[in-house]
Amino acid sequence: MRWEISKTFRFEAGHRVWKQNLTYGRGAEFTRNVEVPQNKCVNLHGHSYLLEVTVGSDTLSEQDMVMDFYHIKNALKELIDRIDHSFIVDRNDPIYPELEEVATKYGAMKVFPVDFCPTAEALAKFFYDFLTERLKDAGLLGEVQVVKVVLWETSTSKAEYRAE
Figure 1 (tube, rainbow, N blue to C red):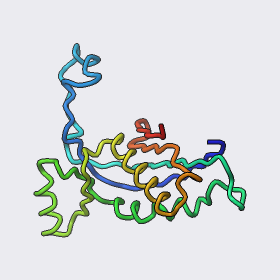
Figure 2 (cartoon, one colour; figure 1 turned 120 degrees about the vertical axis):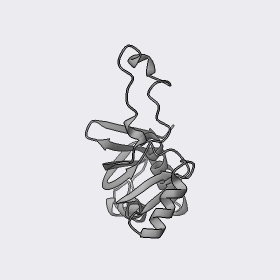
Figure 3 (cartoon, one colour; figure 1 turned 90 degrees about the vertical axis):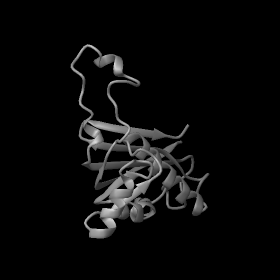
């Protein structure tokens, strides 16, 4: 892409990485000689997320822009509003049915169900796919494409998903 622009969004949300097991898997070699680590992220917890989306184009519009930042904001606004202050939960998580029941019964929790374990990596892809579909639906895909999505979970930890 010759030109790229980025827009950031902030939202608060909870999740749990129900598949986390630090005793095996990619990278476990680095902790074999230390005390068995605690799988903290299997617990319900939350983050102040920072989402950065980058779109690009090889051409500029008649207004000399890739796209107005206002339009990127509106393409994601509804999704950000739905996910903000929610609990993001995988429908395959064993506790999902009970969370949904509690949310329905007491109205004290906004549940945002997804079909994947809501890691930062998987959520970055989720936002990437969502924005790509929005561009496609608007007839803009081809002129403009999503270059990458960066999702910060904390000030020191982020995940990126980018175009191939």
